[in-house]
Image 1: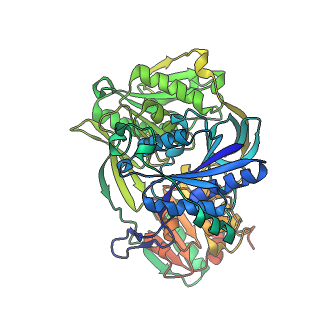
Image 2: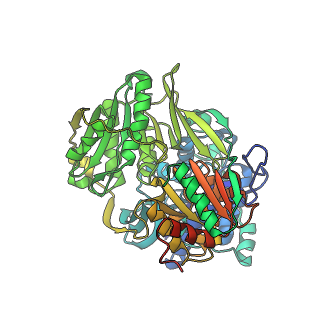
Image 3: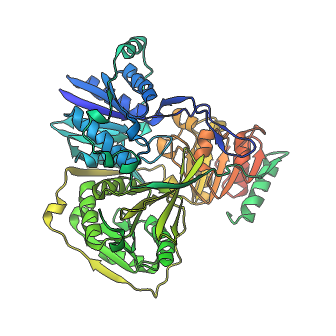
Length: 264
Length: 337
């Protein structure tokens, strides 16, 4: 049997973000959370691979607060088999190294995965570092920016990596971690039986007592980085907006502006 | 634990693409120069590649005091474990206080691998780097949550302090032809060249010569472009301005433009000198990916389109009428009916 893990994250929902008219910064409602949109492609790709293989099993793994179970359930409703939530108050404040350490400890506990999928990055932290760090801490190859899986046979996975200026075809031996980009597929919408299944699936919680991790490697104390300060940049500008009589005047005005800025 | 006193010097990880030193390597040296001058420490670059020794000397002109070069046929293509082995060996031997790389697909792959091996901190996609002179440490500033929040991060105790830096966040220094430096050619035993990867081939993307994140000028289109064919006009304009074409999410979802051109929360984040948005309404998810551009111009039919709030100059009107007029004005109008 091929065992596949998908690492996902719950993030603040991006659908209802608005700009604060006065401060020019973004406002997000703190209550809405969703499965990281870029993780949907990892979930979908794992399911597509499973559908091609004779015998495969997909486990969804997420680290986060108890409510992140909702994101795991969403992935299960799409077609994953089961899920685990890595959650403990002591994991809080983790940076990418410490998050990857904790996730790696959980993955080691669940053991035996041939492939681990993840999204390119989460839309909140936007680091894209946890995937490669997990792979390294588990001592496996990592294929990043994967836009296509070409072949999976005899312990080797061949992929197309989308890099600056083109696509690179690379192979790696398994077990391996694959981080996928949006162009790889179009995620399915869960059907009713998937939703019913996910409702019934019990998602075990892996807390500190269930994984093998010393306390100085987890949470804030396991994090080499510290936040010095946080500030809110102003996005809005006070530019001039004109309403041109016709396309020619508009083009003239644009040319004039571009010239004044040295673009032309 | 590694004591921070033993570690000194600022290192940049040069990037080799298709056998050439990539321009992001020079941008990194501009950042490195700022940091090394404040710290009064040496500035060094690392270059891993094949037949790269001679080209590596260009890095001196752009600010490097030293360049560590590993030149080996096995480095012709990027195999992450080999690159990580060599970087790790170099860092453990020479102990730099700071190591920065560009936030390209290369930097964002190799750096987290390296940071995990060295068990140190890594800050992704910084747009500003500085030195806290009192504590002598690196201050790494980066946008998060789509630019909604800026965070300044430090790695107080563990060395090296590592960060990836967004391409185009700084211009390279003017090359100083008279400046020389020390080239240190390193050789390593064959076990560091064992890999679990195999490189097979590269297929060039014909739609663009320059990746959008590394372009000084971006001409972007949205739903207001009304179709795939009209994007040809954006390509025409971008060619005239030596730029690249960007796109909003809906146009990518409709298949008008490949995903590699998508700008925004679920696409690329860009910081060009000049950003021009045609028929893009400016949903916050898009703005998140381009609001730090230096100059922003927007053309949209809807006077209330949110894109105008982040624009330095806006024109209310139909992009499909104004764009051909602009192309004509700039001398390439003939091919557009």
